[in-house]
Each structure stands twice: as structure tokens, then as C-alpha cells.
Amino acid sequence: MEIITHKKINQALCGRPIEVKQGFSTVELTATEQMAADDMGLVHGGFLFGLADYAAMIAVNDPNVVLGASNVKFLKPVKVNDIVTAQARVSFQKGKKYQVDVIIKCKDTQVFEGEFTCFVLDKHVLS
Figure 1 (cartoon, rainbow, N blue to C red):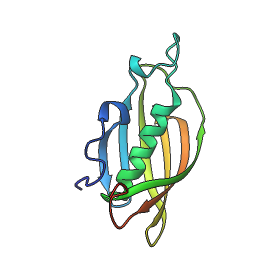
Figure 2: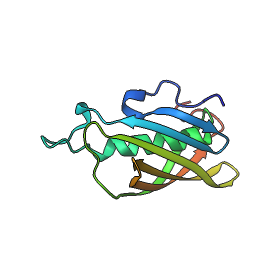
Figure 3: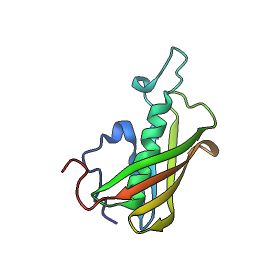
Figure 4: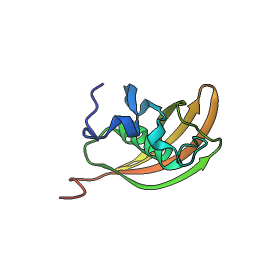
């Protein structure tokens, strides 16, 4: 399935799509030294949020999709060189409103979970 949203995203920072189908996506991110928050290699949570948000946008896959709200939990730390995988699934849709559930795992351990409320607008948000 062709990705028709967020085409200019920096995949080194937000992840690389590895599976995309209607209402679902899998996106993988390798945590780099540039993502570290401290000398111990703890990855800043903003990069995990960015990965989850990108996965949610691709699951909806509309050029005019935007994030309206989120409720997230950081469950375990991620460190430099970890490879994390986000899976996003549309769990509910009514009109232009989509609820997308996202989990991120490092190997078999869940490190993040979130619920993202997305909206598909009639035109680009900056128009």
C-alpha cells in the first residue's frame, strides 16, 4: 500500500515504515547517539512519541491527517542502539475522527503504549 501522508518526514528520526495496510502500520526506529538524553544512553521520550505519532498517521494514511490528542504511557526505558518497533491500528472511526492504538516494543518487551485521536481535514491544516 502506498503511503500518501507525511512524505517529507525524516525517517532517521521518526522511523522507517516496514508494513502498511488499511488501518494498520508497523514502523521501525534505531535509536542513535543523537537521541540520547544523558551520558548513560537513555533515549529521550520525544523520539518514541514521534515514532508512535508517525505510525498512527500512516495507519490513517490520508494527506490531511493531523493529531488532535493523545494519551500515552512510557513503560520501559530505551537506550542508544536499541531497535524499537511501533505497531499502530485504527480501533475506531466515525466520520473524520480516528482513534489509533499504538504500541512500541523493543525485542519482545513493550516500552510504550498510546491512544492517538486523529482527524482528517478537508484541506491541509496550513491552507
